[in-house]
Image: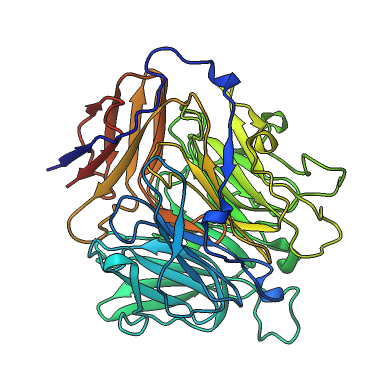
Length: 507
């Protein structure tokens, strides 16, 4: 049984009748960094990586709030006070001092409907229980979780069949206790599976210095754990990994898994070519590798001329390789084509890579190729960017941008793109465990074709968000929506119009 709740926003974005051609749309953002409480990600070499932000609505006002990693500085809670459709504005929230934080991800661990936080740290990881009005308390011990004492830089989670609590993955970087390190000293990773009293921890070896992880269906159509690893420290013999949760082992070439080695930093997955198979971009030092998912479960590298490799700075005269970190897909002009943001920045003073490395905003055209728009849009920051979020922060239907920088103030950009298409935001809720339906797939069908997004926890670089799925509809006057729930149950198609900007589908 599925219940549908419809809500109409106060702001209607144009394009119901006549619009400019999307190829000519001017993408624009306004720098609103002064509307954030002061915050930067700081620290020594253990914080050269990390620097994430968790984005979630923690006070049920319909506006996403933020929890930002601080490294050696305290983590910050930022409450969204933006008027709907107005200028972005945040204020500092009350939070116990937590240092050593590299990143965080929203997740409803106890399925009470209130989002909690998985907090990644240099040291013991933490689980914070969310309460009313953006209150958080440390529930690590109460929930029976062993936070360990490693250098954690990646996270993902899902609900496996029959489990009332999630399976948690924590990806670890260099083993700080190895006297022969840091090179060839990658630490073990951890898979925590639910038990009646807490979680059982399994070490996943070999570890190749994981900087991003994602549990998703991927091209194979079954939930698996994908790891992106930094070859700077595994040096030789390592590769990008895929762990089969059913077989409880890493897949190899005999399983059709191609061993690709890169300086892996971040993962972002989405079907971008309309074939209903997820594609994935892997950020790196040098090429940003886009792989198209294939019907047989394999992946092929996108052609170079697609415009996503972004291997060198696109402004300035520094011809050295770029360093990509957080990647995020999102339809920033609501034309139905997914666009790509990539946070860039030197690790610290690595001489082989560009010192001034602007962030990328790659806008997809109807021909499937991407054009760099970050300079014209006003988001080509030259700070050492790390984690980020591409999300609608003021409920106007346009995706805004937040970026965490290493050793420099956090940045906030409000999407002011004119003449955008209509949009639809979809939220899912189910009674019982896994309240936010992690692992569900939402399909949107318009006269522009089919769009597919899966609800996941993980990916990016130390940054996660739990917000409604955002779909640009272009000039469509109606759309159909269908949900494939985590257990495989399919809903009926539901017809909506662009006047219904937000829908919640429940069961």
